[in-house]
Amino acid sequence: MSGNGDLSVQEKYAPSSICFGCGPANERGLRIRSFRTDNGMYMEFNPEEHHQAFPGMVNGGIIGALMDCHGNWTAAVALMENEGVNSPPCTVTASYSINLRRPTPNDKILKITSEVIELSSDRAKIRMSLICEEKICATGEGLFVAVSEGHPAYHRWN
Image 1 (cartoon, rainbow, N blue to C red):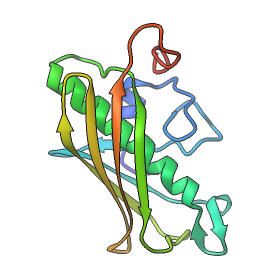
Image 2: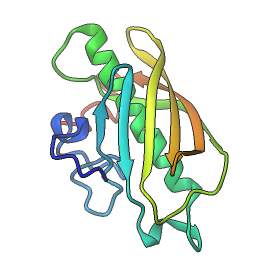
Image 3: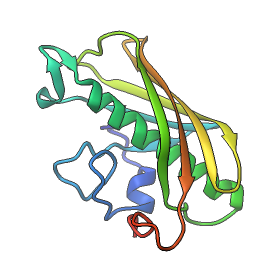
Image 4: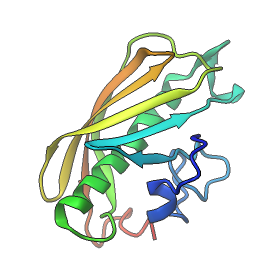
């Protein structure tokens, strides 16, 4: 997790979320912390020993969870800013794909960037990159959509 003293978007907008990847209230989760940039978000994550797939390398599922949740928050904040409102809509993942380009070291800080590549009133397409020691270890894209009242995830950030 980032050592930044500022509140992440997760802590600011969804402090009681229990999501495994991004929920600040999930003590057993990854508890990612995403921060705004000019056209997206940035986060850092320090993997722990139990995040390994094999000695010294991060599990691909953990990488997928990091990028999925980070991309989802990038979309939520972009939709919020696009609509000019004070809180993000609850968004869910419609689809995402990850390309694991090289083994990702488990004992180094992972840096994930994301950017908006398409935006409409209720959905955003996001591009993501995971970098470790200045090498791209994974890339991906996701489509994230805002959900309405009645969807099981609608109140998950409240």
